[in-house]
Length: 450
Image (tube, rainbow, N blue to C red; front, side, top):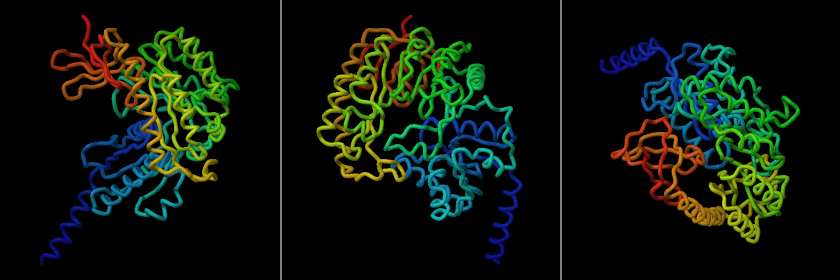
């Protein structure tokens, strides 16, 4: 009798669940560009009257969409681990369907289908209409320019282009994201306007290569005009530029940046190395001397600008002399913000044909040495801010502090300003004038001025 009761209970449970309306949970891994894709998917699902959430802490969604990253080894492993976790949940009966999209799926779809066949379907980076069909939903063109933000509402990433045409030796982005495609300027202005109407005060411009913007659509680099038009959108107080490629950098961008008060004196320009030998191996199309001239021009035309860059340690062919050259370059350039990756040997990239002859331990040691150098530079720069007042955008309250950023800081990757929440009251999403009382290498501490 007991087995029969168990079977009945199981069948009843499945039937009852079938009557319940589907709920989709979108899980995003990787960079801000993936986050924008997930927000577009969220908007399209809700526009089709499908219940959907982004990274819900509740376990009440029966359909999971995982937006994966395939950029470097650690990111790929995180994506695979996440897929396996939700596949286990499916086999345990906790979810009904698991779909996988994004960069890892684009790059390794055939392998993933063989290795993890329990996933209901895999989709590439440009397969949104196909993914929507799984939900019997249509891609609604009237929602282009509309976007439901997954996190904070007071700032938003604005993806101005997709894909990349650069031949960098180490990078698999063109494999996963395809050729560069600029979004039309009118469409971006409309999207920015809609975001501003919904409370967004800061736009973070992103692309695989933002300085290439417009070449495909307008037959010229049109980033300066785009930034100029976006700066006229009512309600946008800050515009921040990310991922500017140094080779062929359009200097008219600097003129717009200097002229417009709501364009942040901030530039994210990934340089990757400071030694000519490695820059050549990386196929970056520039030299240290040209890069230093560009940095001088940027700082001359936009006084007080904060320059953020990224470096790579351990590219095939990087000698100890090359690494020392990179250290000297960093020390001379005194970047306000700097991050570093260890080289990841990615198949189908140009560098994959080279011998990956530097051990992971040596790569990490070199990366640590760079960050020790940068920590000293950052500390010196931050100490100069003590006693000064900065306009700060309050991002969140955490523990005993309100936490915000100056115009020189992008979310998640840069410095933060901490204000004692017991002594002061601030509203998340508002700006405040903050006097800096003390500083560490990567954080500032201050209080509002009356």
